[in-house]
Length: 239
Image 1 (cartoon, rainbow, N blue to C red):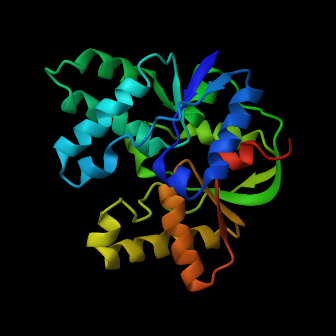
Image 2: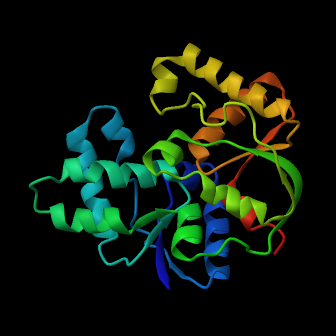
């Protein structure tokens, strides 16, 4: 199976190892991974800020960059959810309506692609640590992803998953929300981190680096010992 990899902005600029580990996992699953170096953003930042016209320009490029893909896989539920749920609005009654619809049907977040499309949960990974999992808003509410990451983590040798209290509550990032309402955003992050620390976990795991970046910032600011890690990094460990 051939898949096109979409690398989100946060991963490209701040956590590039997540993209490389995503490739490792997909190749171990038997996929041929292709990467279009012309790709840029999915258009979400401009859209969420209210600049629909500018966002549409970026989204048009996304559709053009991936119009030949059978499957598009991204290690980000946030970008995946945005494409699925908003491209229809942007391209309604537009010349790009048909290709945009095709793209929305072909994009998958990494965990759901591995479990739902490939039907693989065990990648022979080994990660000797206690972790707790954070359900990002995008994964849980936009992509309906909850069990898939947990099935993948359950198959990792040496890993212990302990669920935190209020695992489905927001981490407080929300893109520009964290800038406009910084006091609320910080309080939400601190509550999430406190719940994670209460499990005695060594790592907070998620499908979204935006959430993890936000939490990591507060963890570092507060001098706390718990660490963050993306799901792809765990699945690629040990081989």
